[in-house]
Length: 337
Image (tube, rainbow, N blue to C red; front, top):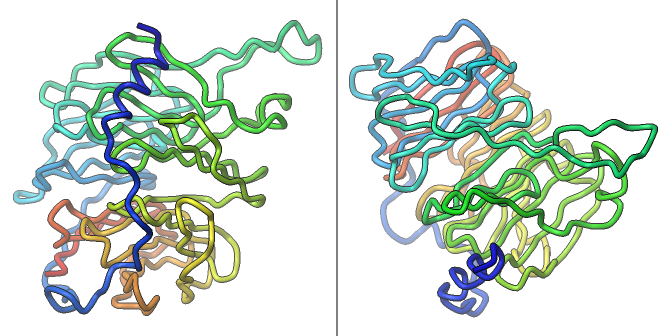
């Protein structure tokens, strides 16, 4: 069975898209979170990316040349994931949904690891054929982030989707200008919770939303953002950028902006949703992270302990903690419930 038939067959099991709903209501359920605890994970280099394990008991922190796994309970280092060739900073870290695997991204390569042993299982990269263009030699496709699909069988890196079962990959057919200009392809991407949608980003060219099941582009916007995240119900996408205001909530299907989050004084370069969609978290070069009310756009909490730009943010699977990574060489964990 071909790659796309397998992928489309899997996604055909995804439930049909529900009718459009209002943004989540923050007045339902528990009250606004309150900070009760803080932990600091110190590193030798700036922290570029952070992630929680599916259980929430560990945090994975990427820095120069390696990613470190830490125990939340003991605040001790559990394991180090270090690529053999130490190809610069780790720009992205992620756990597979079942927690068995870890991926790290360094210099346009995805490294797939055994989360329990720390063993390197596979290295993924794409050499681009320039078709004999004398002005350009073949080069590795550039991407800075990667994400697992909800079942852990697929990895999206830039505009490339890898089938981990078959060991093959295909490119999402992005806009023609990206495919003509060497080095100008989508460098970042995000999967929605079911894997139905893929968001492809390039800060110089724009952002595209794709329905992966139908392999159809839904919309395109120029002036691409720096970061993006889907809401858990796939109804909304959160974008962070250098625009004013620097963060906004868009409708997944038509790109209509329904909310802005105004308060940061510099670029927003990392965003995340809480598991129930009631809150969003943004990290900025203004040295702060902010927790926002999704419905109203109001600031719920400001985290200002970092001494340099906040490069990465994450919310724990139970929604009770936030994790931020900064150029000040620290990652900070805070309980908000």
